[in-house]
Each structure stands twice: as structure tokens, then as C-alpha cells.
Length: 181
Ligand SMILES: [Zn+2]
Image (cartoon, rainbow, N blue to C red; front, side, top):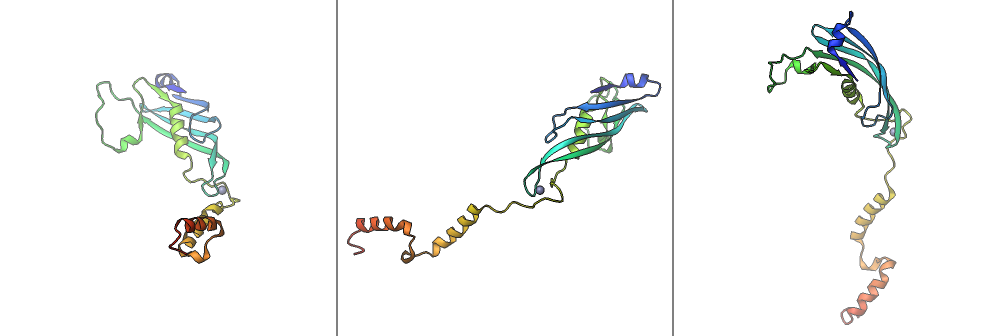
């Protein structure tokens, strides 16, 4: 969804409200992003605010189970006035101004992209399924058994040989006859 800054400026109130409802390709977002957004032209720039919500499907970082979580995102953006035509793109240093996007030269403000950025930023970095999270999954038994047998085999000597190796032992005895008998 795009808003034309010239159309916005032609409105008596220089203000418009949109019902936002779009399916955005954002990781973990499984429902359309819906909400209401107000766009206000102000001093050559544009103020965009409102709120949207959607649903996330996440994997709990503690118990590793998938779960759903609703996400409410406040939209609060400020776009500064269009750059002059003769203001050729130059390598800019990071200044305070860079926290504000600039209205594109064609005057079309991509509301979908602004919502996309806001939802992406608001997505949780750490995911926990809830207060009833069962906690970390128990260590796999295979892993524990592997560790204990690895240390046990070092102290094992021929007198306590595993019965499963008996056949192998007799095989070696036959081949190396003369040394052991
Ligand atoms: Zn959990």
C-alpha cells in the first residue's frame, strides 16, 4: 500500500486514515497484518502513526515447542521532506537525520514497507511459550550413555572383557598361536 504525498497535501486536513490489512512476508508471521494507520502531512514531511497486530508462530527457546503469540505493534514514523532535485546522492555520514526516512522522489510513501520494518523490529528475539513452559527438554539418553561408556572403556582390561568381544578374542588367539599359549 502506497500513499501519494501530493494527494495527501491536496486534502483540506492533510490527513488520512487507512485500514491496513496485508499479508506480509515476514519470518514467523502467520496471519495478515491488520490495523489502522494515520498519515499526516506536516511541514513538508509526513507523520505516520497507528497500530497493527498479527499472529506469530514461534519456537520456544526453552522447551523447543512451537507456540502462537499475538503481536501488537505501534507505528510511529516520521519522514522528512523530499530532497531537492539537485541534491545529488552523496555518501552521507550517519547523523541524527538518518533516523528519519526521506520521502521518495516520486512522492509515493510505501506504507507496507514501514509496517514491515516495524513488525520485524517488534518480533521477539527471545521466545518463551509461557508461564507453563515445561522447561528444557531432558538430555537424550543416547548422549549420556555414550559419555559414560567412553570413560569406562579406558579403565577396562582384558580380565573384564565384554562378553560380546569373546569371539573376537578367541579369533585373535588362534591367529597369534604360539605367543599366548
Ligand atoms: Zn517453552
